[in-house]
Length: 56
Image (tube, rainbow, N blue to C red; front, side):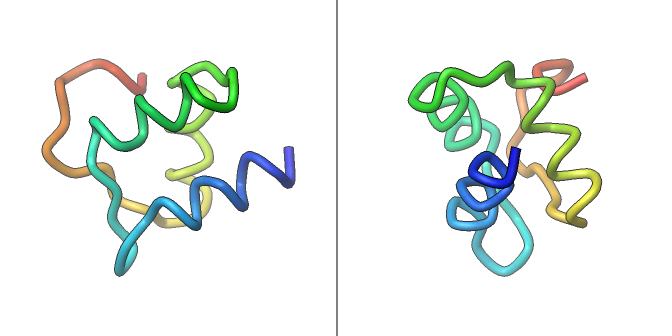
């Protein structure tokens, strides 16, 4: 789990990460998009330019 949190934090810029970037990250590390969305919520990272519903 710590590796996923670190990967999300690296992907974020100024507390934000784009939907497309997060989807690519999820695929690259073999994680469910929803799991990364929850990490963003917990870490206060906002998902921007989102395709609605991808990270529910």
